[in-house]
Structures are given as structure tokens and as C-alpha cells.
View 1 (cartoon, rainbow, N blue to C red):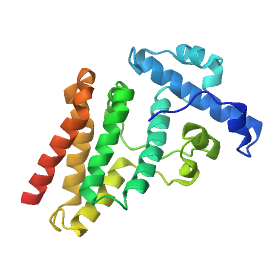
View 2 (cartoon, rainbow, N blue to C red; view 1 turned 30 degrees about the vertical axis):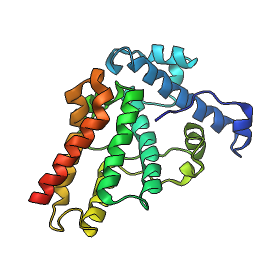
View 3 (spheres, one colour; view 1 turned 90 degrees about the horizontal axis):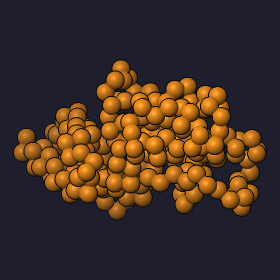
View 4 (cartoon, helix red, strand yellow; view 1 turned 120 degrees about the horizontal axis):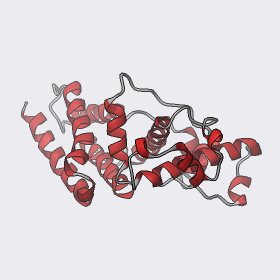
Length: 229
């Protein structure tokens, strides 16, 4: 997923949004991208808020107008990623079966991990310390428009967690007899989530060029196992 940080005046003129809201959205995305670039060279825990603000050309106190803490940057990234994946779901749902769509989600994730290879490490570390999912945060129309300029419908996408997408398309797979109707959604979702986070961790960032293929190989093994139950 690529999020833009530089915008021209015509971009803003297309949106009937007050200047203050535009500046807020632009700065919020700039802070996120500054953090994502820094994560390439060191973990988020070692990145200071001052470094992020310097890269985004804002003062350090300004950061706290947008995020309460550094970890909130990861929440924001995940929320934007959910919009991207949900859009992809809408585009693929009519053309692909349930299992093929899930495979496409993994493939799209692999592409994103190659673009930003260290972000998954940060997300895994962050999620391992969570007691509950923080939920989907409100993302304004202007933030969506600036982050996804090639997706006009981004303003109205109802983004959902990846586990919900897994459940949705497992149900389709069972309806279309790609999986036995008695297949447990709970077991399948746990297995898919384990693959989703575990395969990148097992490979390591230096082997992310293999991530898409390994994802697909592991998914096919999972489908066989679920079909044999």
C-alpha cells in the first residue's frame, strides 16, 4: 500500500473541504509516512518522536495533536490498510471464488510487505502486547481521498478487520463447495491468521521476495487439510 505525502493545489481544489481540515489530514499522513520511512532503518521503539516530526517538517508538540503515542501510528496504518484491502475485496468478490479471493488477499499483503518490509515486524510486536483489538478509528473523507487518490470510492468504504474478510469468504467457499459445509470457521480463521502473521516472521525480511509463493503454498496445504477433515 502506497500512501501519498505530497499534494498539489489542484488535488485540494477537487475537494470541498475547509483549509484547516486539509492541513490536518496532510500533516497526519505526513507523520505516518515519516515513521514508515524511519522503520526501514530501525524499530519503532528506537525512533524518537522528534525524528518523525523533523522528517514531517512539524514541531514535536504538534505530534500530539494527531496521535497520543507512537504506537497509534501503527493503528492508523492498519486502518488505512483495511480500507485498501476492503476495496480490493469489493473489486474481486464478483470475479473470484471464496478460496481464490483469500489467496488474493495474501498475495496483495505480500506485495505490500515487499514495499515496506519492516512494517509487519512492528505490527506483530504491537499486536502481541494487545489485550484487545483497538477497533477501527474514524478516518475523514479528506484523509481517505489524499491517501487513495486513485480510489474515488474510498470515502465510503466500510473497512473491516482481515479476520472478518476471512470469515466472509470462507462462507462463500463452503456455499460453492470449495470446502466441506461442516468446515469450522473458527478453526479456519485461526489457521489463516497464523499464516498471515507467521509466514513473514518465519521467512524474515531478507526473503520477502519469496513471501507470495510461500503464502500460496501454505494456503494450498491448509485447503487440503480442511477438505480432509
